[in-house]
Image (cartoon, rainbow, N blue to C red; front, side, top):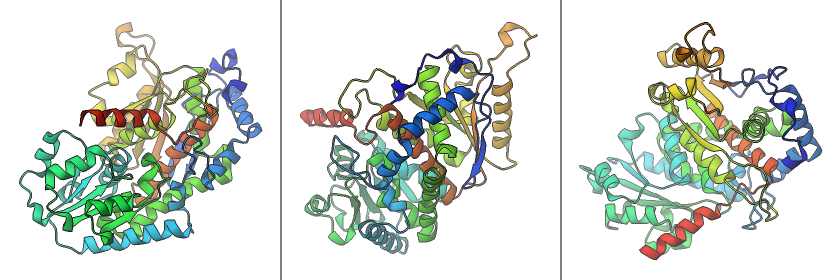
Length: 444
């Protein structure tokens, strides 16, 4: 679809007459006015979306049509945040909430959670963002290196721990091997499974009453809305869990109703402009809240696993660039790591800065750094001290809550899906990842 635009149009690179959108929705402020997207590009991009039914195509995905053509599956993660949802998804959520409530009333030393990829990055991000004393109560084990779990479970009384295996297939090598190395399979009575493969979990020895299912067509990187996020329900309860789901739904409804005026669309416009007009190779996400410190890692998987493709939905090699490299970090820490390159380096990048609203030092740093990046230095100082002007989009959150975190995550998901529509790629498969899994089996 994007080939229908003249990507080499000179006017697209003249950043003078630019859009000045500022939008506050679902407790989040999106400020695009400093990114300097030319009005002419935005107008042509908007027309491209309208003329090629981009919003109808998104709605098809939202409605559960079988758009994952290489796996002949629908996309179902939206069902978990819809209200009302289909009975199957509602039943899965309700059963998970029953299990979560039962676990919360037990006396345990820690919950040891085994998962990788989407079964780890989403729950980890939510845990850090929304669960009080998260690491006092939870051990997250993700990798295959025994040094990780030796360190993390050292000194624990495993008899008094609860174990959760999160694996859609219930065949993830790293997850099962880590569980077996830690437990010796001696604590199955204290073990719960979150999976779409109930039969295999039962054959493994998990009590059927402790297996929580979720839909096989819910991709791992989109699975935070499914029972995979049981930790949030265990420690914060049903009300906050449902607030999280509702926050995601508000972002969906905003895109479905407001279309080209939605922050999801404007972020997609920004991404395409940087990637396909300016030819910037990376997207940089910097966040100034400790509780959201791993947001860039969550986004990295979401975008790069979804859109890191070179073949279109028709099986043809693409002639345009798709997903950029996504990187980022926790702002106060990154200032003393790679900000020098941001200020004076030769590379340019798509830039997002995020912060909550408060009077604390980290927010003042966000304001100071944003101002410095936007304005740069005076031109009448020594060249060695001059910095480049950058073009960040500023995203500020009124307060970090289940609702705003859900809305932020869903906004990022939805703009990632919009990008895939413009690039005409399938955002919901990951055949490169599957190859790596298969070849690993040769060495077991």
